[in-house]
Length: 310
Image (tube, rainbow, N blue to C red; front, side, top):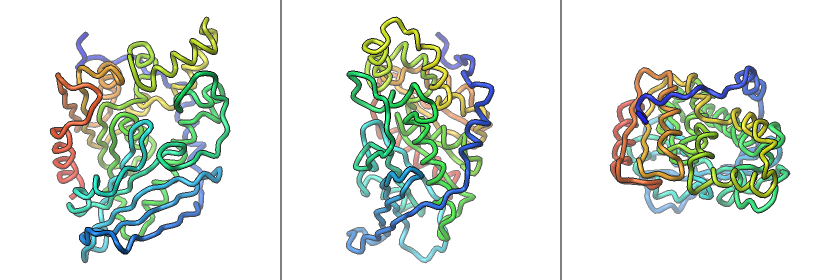
């Protein structure tokens, strides 16, 4: 297969844009910001943030702001990988030391954040991929995307944030969320998406040998072995498929993929990349890497953040 030309048909439903527009409604969240006075790196200011979502779910994030005389800062919102959390502050100091405010968003139900939504989980399923998938309006990732839209809306209104210089980034699950966030929010000026999960989901379910896509196969195996619900399930997935947001993304985008990745197969990543409407887009191909971080990719992140935000 010629991956560089792999561009499968979108699975967007006719009401895809309308569905998400209806969820962009005003919301005044309850946000508690606890500044850490004793953080040892004095070049930054760090806050432990609790953001209460529409259904009362309190999600956590880090807010890391350069500690200098500058009045406003560009911002990067980081989304974490599947089963992880907001991470540790030290992981993001390099961006703050560049002069960029960093927001480390934690998903409901992952990390240390609870999830107050109630789902029909099915049997034998360890993760979040199929939580509520039979009911689109109560599907796990629909809740997550609404949380992200509300969080970005709150963050952009902070008086020390320059909302004209906003980036989103992440890897794996975080990479897919970065693409969705950029598609849902035209204010995003840079997206960095490394080996994104949640892209071209149907192909991922077909090809993946590990990770969250396997949960979907397990769902059918133990709940619907004849796959009578397959079309409806895939239709519901299409509303959160990162590939389907890519035609609405016009900002610069940096992506990456390892060709030995069996969790987010290369086909699923190139499907998103080739549907991007961005005039400036690049995908770094790491032939001998699988589903794993690497320092080459991190250096590229720093390059693009410096180029497009500073």
